[in-house]
Each structure stands twice: as structure tokens, then as C-alpha cells.
Amino acid sequence: MRNVTVRFVALTLCLSFAAVNAAGQNAEQPETQTDKYGRWKNGVTEDWFFELGEKYRSEDVATAQKLWNEIEKQSNNAGDEWAGVYSIAEGEVNMSYLRWSPQHGFVRFHIYTCLPAVRGLDYGKVVVSEDHVELVSSRASETENSEESPTKYVKVKWGERHYLVAENDIESFFTYTSGRGSLPYTDAGVPIDFWGRIDDSAKPIADVPVVPSAYAEHVKKPIDTRIIKVGRSYTEVDPDNDVWLDHVTPVTLNAGSNAGLKRGMTLHVVKSEDYETVVLTRVGRNYALGIIVRSMRKPGVPLVEFEPNIKRDYPPIEVGWQVSTSPHKQ
Image: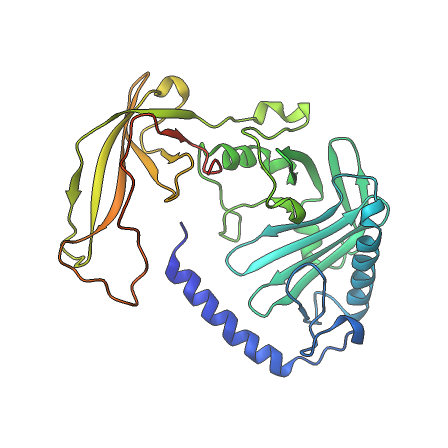
């Protein structure tokens, strides 16, 4: 879980910058497409400001907006299940949105979400094959973002969800879906992410995504196991914490190194309302030992109104609970 303090600071900065930008923004956009603050109504997410300057000009904005709207109008008749609007997270306060179709090409906006403002944009044509989508920029010689961004993406279907994954990131994608490791970080110091189609965000997933046969060597399946023994619980007290203590329960799983488990791995309790996890402390060939740690309020400490609502009544940990390296089986 990312640091809560970092998120709070980022949000505070976002609100401050947004107030400044709302007062000083004077970029002129078509009347019918802007809100009362001059932000463009893109029709997909919150309205955006444009920051004209070195990275793009007013004519680039006009071209990108026109193409964005043309693709949207005819997307239902595109004849390609992969066409549509995709998004990708690029850190705490940055997102990118991609809209494309085989007939009309693509538009990509890089958004600084604090304002929110368009910090970069790109557009061009699309070359589609059975396994890939290639974005051919019309601005590659003008913008650093175009030159540095991947241009060829692999079509990956995860249940009913569609993803476009850069060729070099296929292995990382399966690390993410299987939960069998940590995602690498980009050069900018943020966890790597993948283009996912927005309309699919609530659709069901499968245990294993489907990739073209040329990338089958990168496929990783989640490790699924279950609790076969529940040990005696104990508490651990942090003398510097006056409110909370850790309630620790040892458990034994019916899989070990033979299934790919390793000491230190975190497994997720399937269908847990509390998103509980098992941290492995010892791994044998066909078994593994781990602990489930629950935050419990110290006896006699009264609840204070402004404190977070940390759960105090947990269900009993039972033999038979299913656990998995995949965090996506909730």
C-alpha cells in the first residue's frame, strides 16, 4: 500500500494548484466544449485545462480535439473489439488517456491530475494486426513524449477486459496478474502500469490472461492454496503505540516450494471482506507456514471520533480458507 502521507501531500498540492489555475486560465477553447472555467469537456473523465507552450501549440490542441471527437462518434462502428478509450496511471498525480480506432487513428493525452491539465499530447495513425496495435505518431519529431513512449503494444485479454501492453512489459504484466512478485519501477520512479480499456474496468477477469502465442513463455499463473491448520494466536505490543496492537495468528498452508512459494511472499485470503493476507515465514517442499496479522485496539482505550474506522470484529480464521498469490480474486 502506498504511503498515505504522500497521497495527502499530493492531494493538498493538487487543490492549491487547481485554485490558481482556475483563476488564471485564459486559453480559448470552443464554446460548446468548455465548462465555465474554460476546461475542455472531453466526455470521458473530468474536464481538462490546456497548457500551451513548448510541448504543444493551439493548432495541436485543435487537431487532437477534432480527432478525439471523430473517433468517439464512429467508435461503435469501428468493427474492432479492441478499439476504444484506454487509461494508464503514471504515478500519484499523472494519468494518460488513449482513444483510438483502426479507421481514424489515435489521440493520447498526458494529464497532470491536480489541475487537471494536459501536460502533453500526441496523435497519429494506427497499424493493427492480429496480435498488435502500433501507434504511428504524427508529432514524433516535435515532442519528447512521442519519442520516448512505446509505439507497439500487444493485445492481452484478461477475462472480459482488454489491455494493450508494451512488448517489453509482458513479463511484468503477468507478475501483476499472478501476484508472484513485485512490479518494477519506471525511470521516473513510479510502479509500471498498463493501458486498460476504461469500459472494461468492472468486467470479470480470469485466472490467467490470454496472450498471443509468441508471448506464451511469459505466462505466469497464480499460486492457489488453502489453510490446513490454524495455530494459537498471540499479541505483539509496540510500546510506542498507545492505541493499537497486533493480533498474530500462525497458519499452515498445503503448498510449498513445489508450487513456487517462497519465504516472505504475501498471499491473499480469497473473498475476504477485510482484504486479509498471509505472510510466509517458512516454506517446506509441500507446505508453508505463515501469519495473519490483525490490528486490534488495546483493551481499555476509548474510541476517538477522528480516528480511522479500523475493524475490531474479525471472523474466526478457519481451516479451509482459500489463499492465493493473486490479489485479484476478491
